[in-house]
Image (cartoon, rainbow, N blue to C red; front, side):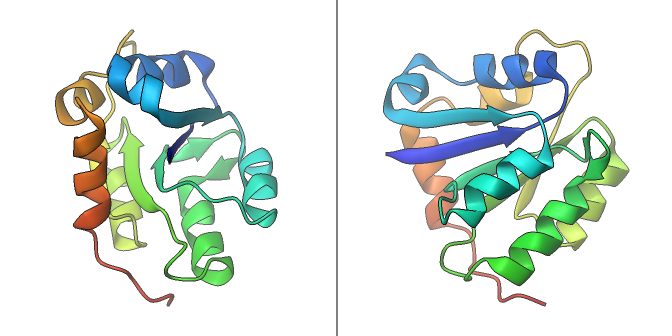
Length: 140
């Protein structure tokens, strides 16, 4: 079962992200939303990592860049999740890409359903394609 995790400190964003995924993805994947970096980090410190992590830039007193830096220092390259930068700021997405996010999607504030997630990830096969076609990046 694919673990697809999302981190955003605004619960409405987390709900919009989840609602962007198809019912097939809801039924066949472990979808989890984290609202803060310490809780997500604690889960990964237990050696449980997502396969794919949707990452916002501003995370309640922390930044997506902190997550990327932590992953580089603490996660074996083969366990490193695919990181999808998903911020409403294009510059934030670009910055996270420079720090090692594998790709990015725009996030539009106020959406009830994430249009970019809905258009890109219609099936589990779409998520599997993302996993299969990312490069394994060595830590800095």
